[in-house]
Image (cartoon, rainbow, N blue to C red; front, side, top):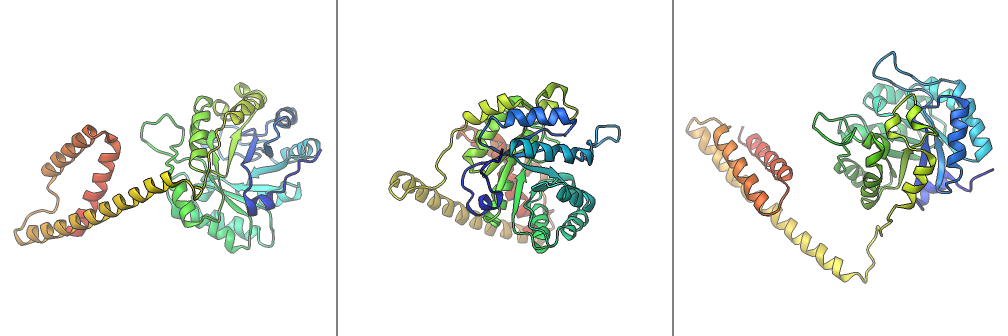
Length: 352
């Protein structure tokens, strides 16, 4: 069985959502084949993923089945026609994966944080045209994410994509990894030629959030999804809570609401709204410039009169007042706080 799908053609056209699914970890031959069999009944799933080597926080955790699992991936590919995909963290992983016919590689979040490791992978991939996806680093650092892509690009790789899997955060959140949508949006702004796939499994950390989170990613115009699937998620050796059965994956996909990414020229109403937003944004920028000009004058006054730059009591009162006013105007309390903290930080920096 061969699925009519060419990943390199998809990179060029980005026609349709790229759906990647499979178990977090390849645990046994039977587990992988049972999962792949279920996924084969979902036409939109084109790529079978499976973790062969698993970077774990604790040394006594299951760290992957290892090289033997690559043979099982090859068997699933031959039997069900999927392209196969796995994570690589070392040049040895790269060599073994390619030798065993893996079609697509990804670089994990823990590897992306180390430019030396990424460079070693890039060096081992020189002269190869295998597609490679780069997961975002654990920390919300778009430059580090982009840097990993650029290192692989410098090695001559032509088919490069990004995977948004969320970011570690100490803040209280329903997510395992905070999505921080502004980070992938910024990556897309900097490199619109790099397709972005959303790993909703790692963002959510639980099945209950998958549908809503995937829909939000769709509304933000993702190019595809990586969703972990397991024939028996409750018995999974790794990340069982975020994996779903192939049957439930099919239900999830069928509930997607696909919205238009581009606006037709005859949609004048939306065009008018956007023009209005552009004018308001211009006003905001002009007001910010005026505010910083006054802040500079305050800084000069403080220096001339021997005053400290940071007036902490006044700042606390000002911030509280702004938050209260913002809430009364229907604005989000956290957003108001974040905006004015950024403005205040910039003001302090200019006065030093």
